[in-house]
Image (cartoon, rainbow, N blue to C red; front, side, top):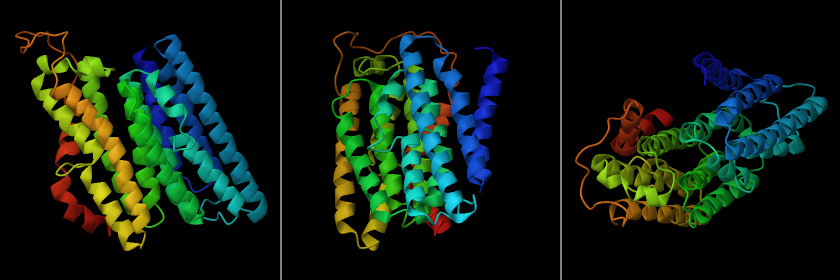
Length: 348
């Protein structure tokens, strides 16, 4: 792709998200979401592969539907209350419609069906943008409107997303689909705690972004999209294989890795709010996700593929990819748990 075009598209992505962050008026927020969607579509379709085009079409249709729902709900709210302000969502029908549309935008269950299909058709870098940056703007709106939404709806969305995210990933062999289901499960954790401690939602979103970035950049570095090719990377790069296994366990939420921190704090907060059954369901749903991460770790580090030599490759062509983003995201994805007290001080 032409670098000038790429610069315009990436700056538009940034502009759309910033516009939504900065707005308190529904029309401006909607405009930011639209700029965001329109900027990523050429990036998704740039390879002219039928799968990429199909994924782009699916993504466009779902995002356009969600945007139309947001427009309709905010217009309804403005018609009834007389103002477009986000903080005045007094009409329950409008607020329910808006949370449903935003759930469709970020791929919460049961509006998640587009997410694995779309991610499967994209290359890894565009998939990374879709899984991380594209979640920020809708999440800003969800956090602002969550207090006006029925708590039962948010709890149902959260529990269903963690269950679907864990259950859907069990049978997959494609790594992008596994990461899509992982994303759905993490979104569920963020939504479940939103009404009680929004700062924990932001913490979970931040850690999710770093862990997912580390996973996608690792796959990009090793040019891997399927489990059976993942079994062969140990002979090419043993150090990367070790850190990848740890990143996957961090995504699963095992101590002493970063991914344990948001799960621990969320379960603690749910217990404080007198919701032991919800906390138990969430903890059990996390085990489903953990199973498929362990499956990847097992395939990658504990088995030897029949297709490769059983020794470390003595030579390898040097990669031209920048390793700094991968190093940074992997370090953050593995080592932030000791910072928990400091983070708690900042968030309370």
